[in-house]
View (cartoon, rainbow, N blue to C red):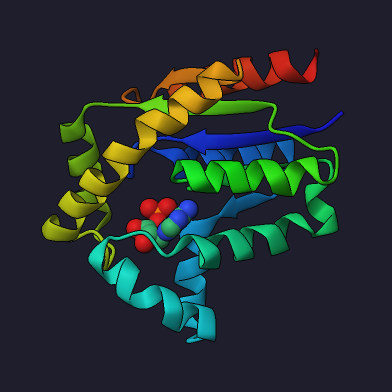
Length: 189
Ligand code: AMP
């Protein structure tokens, strides 16, 4: 039995925080494309150089780069019992690419957890976080870019019957209680 899950939602909705709690409780590897890009930038690797200009502007890194790092990560043994994808897929092309990567090995996503909250909650949380890509202009662009892309992805997984909406506006323990309820029901199926 595997637990292959994807966390969907706009920047600031608390995906990263919830991912950390899921990792702790369910012992699954956390695959965050944003974290992978930030680490590559910090280490000044070739991948980091490629991603930097896009990330600095709050734009998406090109699909061929992003799909490549996810495919490599999903090839690793520790992902076979399950994984938590966070920040990927970000558009429908990436969603299709993910399907191909997984179906090649007879795998598929079990659930997409779609976290939602009002835009003002997202902006306030990102401002409070104060990272280099959390300045007001970059935040606005990230929300614009991602807002347009998130709904079609949610629809794509809703059609497959694996989309689960979670209210991300509550405080983190309340949100995690909802997450746990859902994941436990999947594990027991
Ligand atoms: P995040 O921390 O997930 O919001 O990601 C930070 C930045 O990394 C984004 O603004 C993008 O520039 C880049 N990034 C992360 N995930 C993806 C993805 N799936 N596709 C393209 N770019 C991404």
